[in-house]
Length: 171
Image 1 (cartoon, one colour):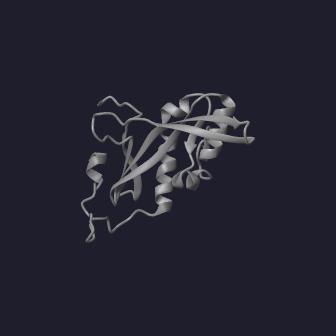
Image 2: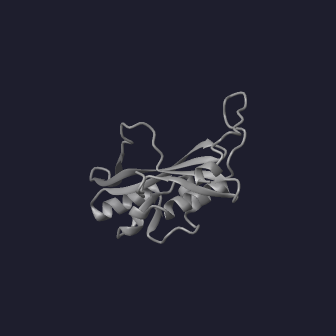
Image 3: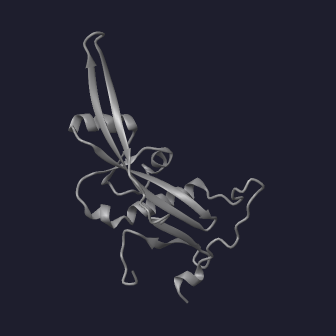
């Protein structure tokens, strides 16, 4: 039997009156899927240098977990300061998820560019910082997840069933 045959793919979804999922995924489980997704980004693991991750709600929860040491989790202020210091745009990974069903979760990666600038006003002696933030486009091919996880009820673990960053012979 193939791996696809063992996965349930959301047959047990139940919605409440407003259409949201009754069976929500626990934050600890979601955090572990984020870490697993970052650990399976072979394109980033093979590149040299730092990879910055946005310190949003999810980034702050996973920064102290078992994430490779080539990722730096920085706040918006730290990213602006880094951009000013290095005099260049800092590309930052934004890691988000999409819960398809209680047993299928997509983890998606997007890039955000932070360009920090400093201004000094001599009239009042004040210093200002400003940031230009650019968000990458997802493309025109419709929604395609970066990494899709599905729960395998036989082994009781989450398996990667699609990884856009690793090409197989079937593709």
